[in-house]
Amino acid sequence: MLQTDVLIAGGGPCGLMLANELGRRNIRCLLVDPKPGTAFNPQANATQARTMEHFRRLGFAQEIRSMGLPPDHPTDIAYLTRFAGTELARLRLPTAAAAPQAIKAMSGSWSAAELPHRVSQKFVEVKLREQVQRLPSVDVRYGCLLKSFADTGPHVEAVVQAVDDGEPVAVQATYLVGADGARSFVRKQLGIAWGGDTGFKRKFMGGKMLAVYLKAPDFYARNANDRAWMYVVVNPQLRAFIMSVDGVSEFAFHIQMADDAATEALTEADARRLFSLAYGQDIEIEILSMATWLAGHALVAESFQRGRIFLGGDAVHLFTPTGGLGYNTAVEDAVNLGWKLAAVLKRQAPAALLDSYELERRPLAVRNTGYARQFADSIGLFDAAPELEDASPEGALARSAASDYLNGHVRREFNIPGVTFGGRYDGSPIIVADGTSAPPDAPNTYVPSACPGGRPPHAWLTDGRSLYDTFHFEWTLLVLGEDAPDTRAFEQAALTLGLDLRVVPHAAAELAALYEAPLALIRPDQIVAWRGHETSQAAAVLAQATAQR
Image (cartoon, rainbow, N blue to C red):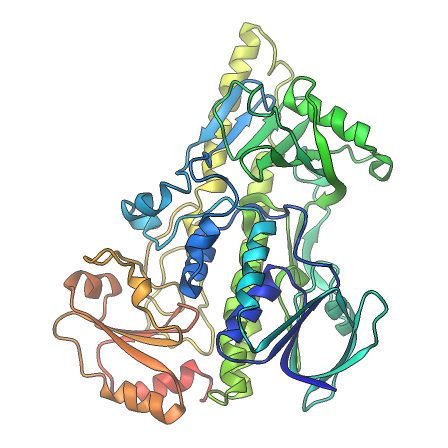
């Protein structure tokens, strides 16, 4: 029998990120996925700034930023009558090459260690797998299927098997995590139902969609519009979007299909015809893969845990992909669960700590699926006037009206610091509240706040480093200002509890003002667990933050 601490079913972003979090803490993991390897199709294409901050925490954000589009390729989002038609709206954004300097010039809502990056999930998975395979405590097995499992009380007993009819292997794990996608075998076996809403019908991002991964070598050469990362077609005849995968010739193309379309009978010839319609002229393409999918979900599982079994990623939340929130929410599931599993397995915290995973992450999944639904409504319920493409005064008026609306929409959907940074764990039993209230949650604005339960306010230090670069991988006690309190009570309490706590002093008065306190306790997932002015309750604070009282 193979023994491990954590059995992870699923080798997508959630499973691979969880394996990274656990492996870096020397926790034994076995990750299985029936696919032969990481994703072939582009899938998600936008890594949000908060996800990039977590990649920075793990040390490979710059490697991720070097992947996908060429460094000087625009990352703009453009709305047009056709891909090579008349431009209606555009949001201009920094290139990958410009991002490191651009982020240092930003403040307020966009004060962050990292900007977003436009990179296909297929590239991200390669990097996550590469990182995880450097960790000696992690065993990664693609082409291997979870066949069965049972929570016996003291542990989980499971059977895994190579998909090419290999011999079944019995596995005994302390915990099982189902990160096995929307059709999760683990969730179905547990009998956990979806909650929320589905089946939304819209002119766009609601109902049947055709996805085509393709090569179009002439896409840019025959397009007079400025380059962009994402192009969205809005016209009375069709609705579609395309994202550049490599900045040269590979693209992910999606087009809305009619509800009564026989999508199962679509051929490559149909895909070529539809692409030419969306482009605005006949253009040669090479189809790498094609499939249909359903848009119009805002679903969250009714439970994220049963005993020793946990669920994360698409196994517990399904999004319409507006705003690019699904993959990024999945990564944060893994970040949240990873340090908690490690703390329990290392006997630094009781098993009760794991109860906080669902308490913290499920409300965030409900929040984020709700925001994605709002963005889908904003673009999907917009009516393109019949005369939009006409070369007439009426057509010009229609394009002007569409431009006004779409320039507002693109900022509502893609300039979303509040969604990106504003997720909070208010009410969590392991957050030590201080009686203050966080700023209102709004998608397009974010007010940095050290109110316990949220992301720590970010700042650039005078030596050019991000404040986050000074945080410890485990627990950090920020000591801010020149007259900060003595921290020995925290250090002794951490030693008693077996916690890896590092005291990080910063004398700058600006940081003390930003945090509105001289002390702030930062969790391993870079969430403010507590802030205060004195240390008399240090032992109680650390005990609550690790579910020991």
